[in-house]
Amino acid sequence: MSEPTTPAVSPEALDWAQRLVRLNTISDRSNKALVDTIADHLRTLGVPLRLTRDEAGAKANLFATLGAGKPGGVILSGHTDTVPWAGQAWSVDPLGAELREGRVYGRGSADMKAFIGLCVAHAQAFLEADLPFAVHFAFSYDEEVGGFGARHLIADLKDAGLAPTHCIVGEPTGMVPALAHKGVHRWCCRVKGRAAHSSQTPKAVNAIENAARLIAQLADMAEAFRRDGPFREGFEAPFTTAAVGVIEGGIADNVIPEDCRFHYEFRDVPGVDVDQLQTEVVARARALEPAMHAVDPGTGFGFETLCSMPSFSASAGDPAVELVQRLLSTTQTTLVGFGTEAGLFQRAGIPTVVCGPGFIDQAHQADEYVSLAQLAACEAMLQALRRRPPG
Image 1 (cartoon, rainbow, N blue to C red):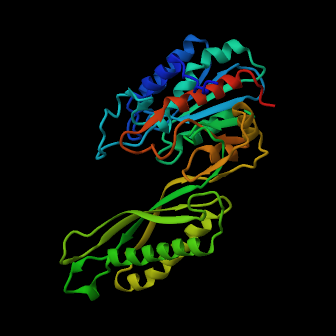
Image 2 (spheres, rainbow, N blue to C red):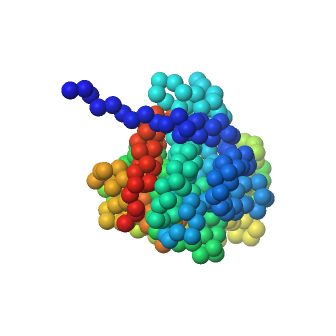
Image 3 (spheres, rainbow, N blue to C red):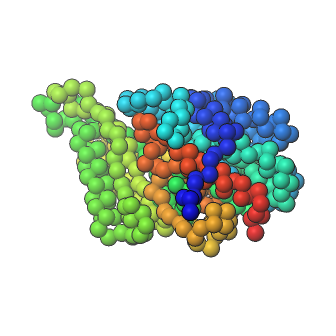
């Protein structure tokens, strides 16, 4: 007997994946070229589009309905932005979409332009299948920096009276349906002190030292999470985590620092009240302020929310999970530690699952890639969707 062979990805799907990887959509840039490329193609097919833009008008979400007027429908969701690659040791062009040894290399190949490209490549086939339900494309901006685009996209769907019944977020899960992921919540804390010569510490309020006291609180909280939970088995770290990622302050060794800022995050397992965690942090800051105010009432702590991506948790019997399991002919599921837009769609009342080609181990790295085998598996899922109604 001959060994089974892995199905090949279609030339059109591969072409679309490479075409999108070659467009630079780092989050601090416009995604207009990518959105226009997709929109122009869909317009030639007569597909109605909805575009929602950021305040500056430089970025856009694209929502397209294949089968307008049909009930419900399945959302195929992906984000168009990528993380940067400056400072990483790439051996290939990050925008080259080079095909080598069964892999497509480039920033966003795994996270997650290949999935978007495969969806667009199948647009005409979805239309020709004349399905009894609609298929929706939901391609957002600024997922990597906080999920800001998806919030506007979802609000627009509500305003338009659209009510899709399933959502597949195509983040890289190795084509295994993911039932849950942690939330990602980040803040910037700014500490205002009072400067003085370093020989006159009683006249000063040291912003760095006070920041350090609050950072110690975050470290204590992280240790308590690790020790006491709550726990959710299946995650690589089966508890909520806390981390400080950026700190900046001071101007010279002999000047008591007047300013300090640091960024911190919580990655919460589903069910944890993140607002309560932040309340504990703020309470500790407020407890430090009286001693600061005794020297200078203008000193203290300020907080700014940088991003808040809710956690996601579905059951094995969730309609979206069951749909993808049928499409893939599998009972397998997984959990992922990274954040996605799935929690936003779920909170909008749309049953959601995370499942897409590639692996998070390759994402955000130098020489990011997605394998042709993963693309073929994803394409097979999309082909199955054309044959099997959601149910």
